[in-house]
Length: 398
Image 1 (cartoon, rainbow, N blue to C red):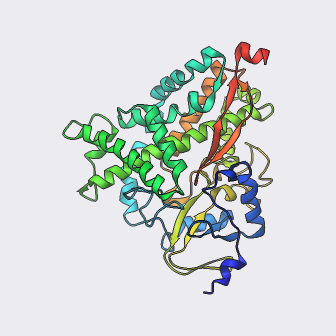
Image 2 (tube, rainbow, N blue to C red):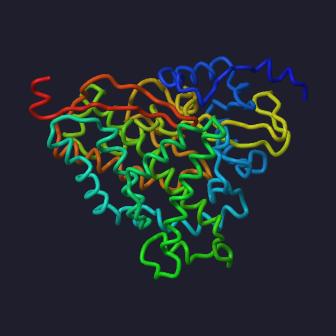
Image 3 (tube, rainbow, N blue to C red):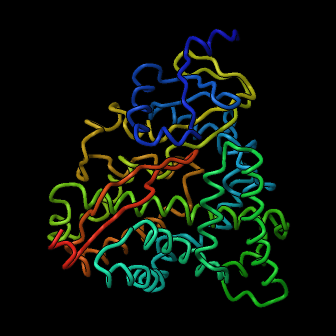
């Protein structure tokens, strides 16, 4: 294949550039309109698949597009493979079978009382003061505390949030990313060390006693698995909570509609996750020659599955810019991925978002936005740097 294929389909997009945030989705839609299979020369270069059909086809074609050379663009600087996230079939199947029991809808629902206590505690200061920042006061606390409670981690939640945020922000700067990844790995190793030789009284303990195809987990596998739990259970869910609460507060009449009919919560959450996905891309590497819409992709080249663009594909979602929880196929968004690598923690993330919204509807029904909201992107996620809100007397006098 000639290199002209890259210049003919060039569209510069640097997913590590923070200035992308304010116009991320307009940019992704522009790529989709002009060049649905596009080559970006950012970093070491990568292809972008932006159409829903192409993204889902690639996600299902592990023989052509592998995760085993990394599932992000660029690399995050970690020292170990991330089980499940960076494993293709046939080994992917026993890994998923091993982990699914901890994240079934029934199992996740059993965590509800714990999450409700965490959410109430997270809101306590904001509720008492009458105003605050939903990102730092609530959203950063709930997912970290939840995954720590499920795993049985004994670390300070704020410390975990800080080091995960630094890791997400550092990707694109190799030296800084390696340092940030090492900090996360150190915390996980400390927690694993505390469990050695003790009864399996929590999820982490039970996982440590588990086996994959008859073999116990290696130290690196256990480390990588816990990193997946922490990063997915913190960063992306923080953004999922913040993006959804912002949508509920900003969309005219939506709070009142949910007060009148709580059964719409699930659809509202899905449509919010579609239109403002906390995870807007994931990466693959081509194993062999491939062709998408007449564009050649060579072995070894990176391929971005641009979920954020697929969520706005008019061939899949009619009038994709319109917020419509009742649209057909609202559950078909790509925010949690697609196929065998669809996020295993989807039910947990949605439950956390649901409980946060239920708390607001029950306890803070007059909650309102209270200032400027600024978007933020990391290499693979989208959210807000702050979400100022007010309620009660503060809302009445604003």
